[in-house]
Length: 350
Image 1 (cartoon, one colour):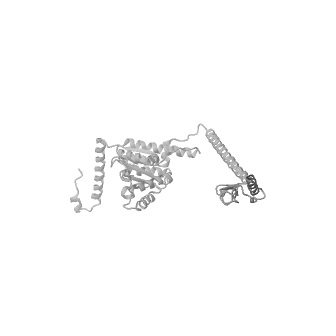
Image 2: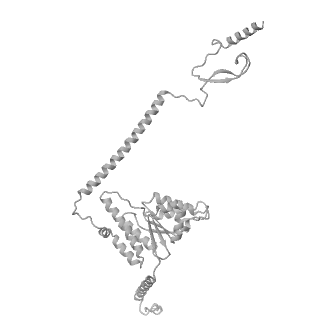
Image 3: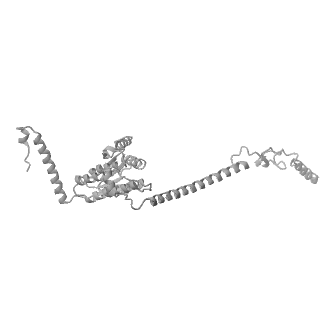
C-alpha cells in the first residue's frame, strides 16, 4: 500500500510538469524569474519557489539591438575616421604647397634688388622721428632707448616679412615696465603708442593710465564695471597699469582685485590685437606679482627695466628744467605790457 502511494505521487508530479500542463511562453520573452506560489507553482506542491518564464520588456538592464543598427553605427564610425584621415592629409598637402610657394617667391627675387634696411623703413613710416623725440625727451636711460629700438626693429622685420608673404613670429606686444617712479615710464609708453600706431599695430596709439583705484571697486559687483570701463577707454591704444601689484592681495582671498586681474587676463588674451596692456612698478614687487599669477607673466612679451638716474644725468635734467622755466618766463615778460607790475615781480634770469 505504501509503494502504491509513492507511485501515485510521482505520477501526479509528472503530470503537473508535463509540457501540456505548462503555459506557453509569450513571444519575445527570454528571461527566467523565480516566483513563489502554491502547489501549482512548485514541484510536488511544496509551495517553494519555482521556475517560470519572465518578460524582458520591463527589464531596464536588458538591452536589445538590431543587427542593421549595429552595421549603421559601424559605417558612421568608419566614415568619420576616413574623413579625419583625409583632412589631415589635405592639411599636410596645403602646408607643403605653401612652403613651395614661399621658396619659389624667394627664388624669383633677383639678387641685385635691394630690399632696404630697417632704418630706411623706419624713416618712411615716421618711426625714426619718434625715436629721435624719445632721445630728446629723456635724458640718459640708454638701456631703455636701446630696448625700444630693438622692439621697433623687430616689428619692422615682421612688416617686411608680411609684405613678402612669409610667416611671422612676433611675440605678444603686452609689456612690463619695472623701475622707480619718475624714470620716464609714462613717456616711453606714449612714444611706444605712437610707434605702434604708425606701424599699424594699434588704431590710435593713445595711452590710458590706471591704478588700483581706477580698476577695483569697493563692494561686490563694483569691480567688473570699473575695470571694463577703463579697458573700453584704452581700446585701440595702450592701458598703462601703474603699480599693478596692488591689484592682487595674496593675504586676502576675498580681495576684489582678483576679479580685476581675471578681466585683464581675459582681455590680454582675447583682445590682444586691439589693446596693449603695460604693467608698471618696482621690479621686486612686479616679480612677486608675476609669481602669484603665472598667467600674467606668460602674456607679457616685452620687459623693459628703467634704471635709476646717475648724478650727472640728474644735473643735466636740472639744467633742462631751468632752461624751460627761463623760456616760459621770457615769453611772459615779452607778452606783458610796458610798465606792468608783472615785470617788477618777475624773478631774475640769472
